[in-house]
Image: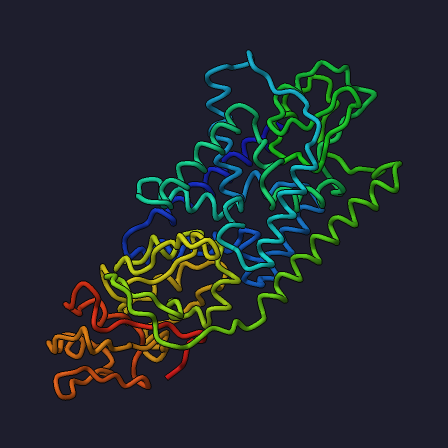
Length: 451
């Protein structure tokens, strides 16, 4: 039985190493993305948002069969907690064993409820602050950064680190919405960790090594909704009383089963409602941005990368995992600090512009918020259009010279924009020397246009 534990550890270590390498890769990384780009797509929330039925079904079916193995082998945040748990054991050894804790279901279901509500309202950036994959990717990508995203990364590291170091998998079983959702299924999994009451002598060894705090020796039961299938307990029982087996009887309390099923159906319905609500089109004013005394003009319509298809598609699917932000070579993509789109990427052209030959963001997005496109496709997609502010123009012609699609011509010393040719790449805005306000900037399109 110990072999299962070591196999799990090896697989988990490989998954954590590969996902971390993918997130931290700051080079072209085409080879790395080719071999590892599928891993983020195996995460449950990105798969749900990408409508990846195969992955979602595989995760749910596996959980129903064997319990929350996903949380110990596939989820990077779950695996990351095991590092702090290992440090706990290294420092304290057996002096501070784990013990059974009653499930705090009111916390779990409250967090899950708020998570679903925020997703329904389109506040993905706030909701995904507790989503496991997004939280881990943001933390790794921005731990050495600056600004709000950096401090959120620090806060995530401290919160998860302290909770796991002191209490084991408490974060998984109290704050993680994915863990709670899978817990509703794994509570009734066909196979799982079971205790043979006739063989058990209540020595307490299994309880002391259970980092999920879910082994109740008083009743000689394992809380399947919180067990993450780490297999730590299997090798500690000398009586052979704890093992993986099929559960013959689910529960004598039929009403309890019905309540849990109703909860699961309610959550599923809420997630479905969120998807339906995201399909509604947003009505935004298409006028020009108000001219203010700022270097960066205020856009009435935000810009989203080619492949995003539309503002609706991007905001409804983006989990703010920061993969695209970390891979953008021109630093055009930045994490938003706006409440409604917190941590989701937006485009700015003060350090560069979106080059037509670059498609890295579309290659790494795991949810379909930015769908994969090639370089030829990108040159035929318009994500926005340039807007001229004549009063600020000094007539230098820099915008016309640097426009890759030749959408800008100088007429009587002033730039004129042909919107039918403009890609919205931001080269004109980046190269414009007018200060303090640029003389030309790019307005986004609510829905991208194929030219």
